[in-house]
Image (cartoon, rainbow, N blue to C red; front, side, top):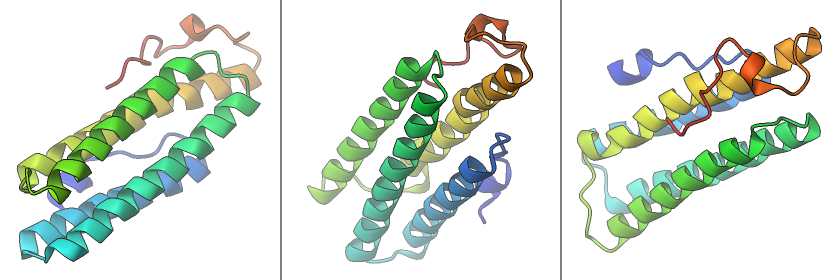
Length: 153
């Protein structure tokens, strides 16, 4: 695992999401490794598409959980997901058209976004679930100790 990935704390307190977050980190790490090793474009494209597909599946899982639990900040959280997917799609499109050269620097947005979103937005949802289940929260996100974290980090 790259040093950058070692600094990411992906635990949000929900085992299923933690497993997915670690898988996403592994995919980003594989992509970084492929770039460092000078892998061919076909391998890089496969990894980018795999990351994109996995990210979409993960976001659908998160949003399904939020919907089932009537999470009050779901719309904002979904907006963050849509924003990243647009960025990721644009990133892949530029790469496929030869208008973007992948490097550690150009990939850093993936890691930074993933780490910030996991530690902020996803942890906020996990906190809300814990507080709700403990009876401290009546669908009021402002009652959370980490309130206001639903901005897209």
